Image 1: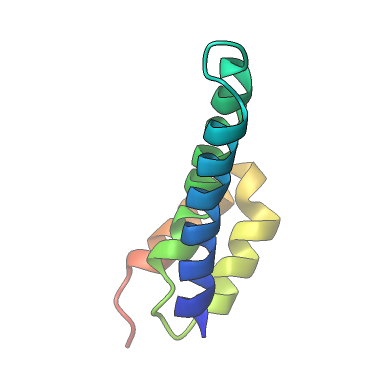
Image 2: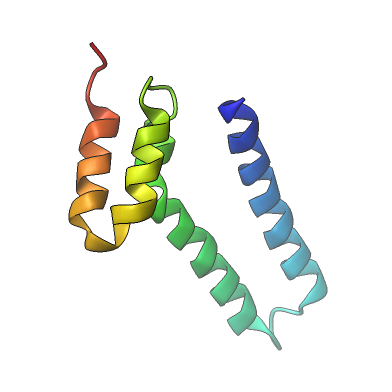
Length: 88
């Protein structure tokens, strides 16, 4: 089920970028494409520990830690370390 959400997010991101690129000419509205690309990249960095830890048994806990303590940067690092550690 998590894999389906992950696929939907990736496909949705590509569709959003394609729609923006189609409807807004690059030379006139390049700042909008830059903003949308920056938002997508920021979300990728923001949820990086969650994406790494999707296959762990504590994936939901990593996601919650990432959501609520990411802004401290320490919480993001803790979530990242937790995501890359091996399950017992």
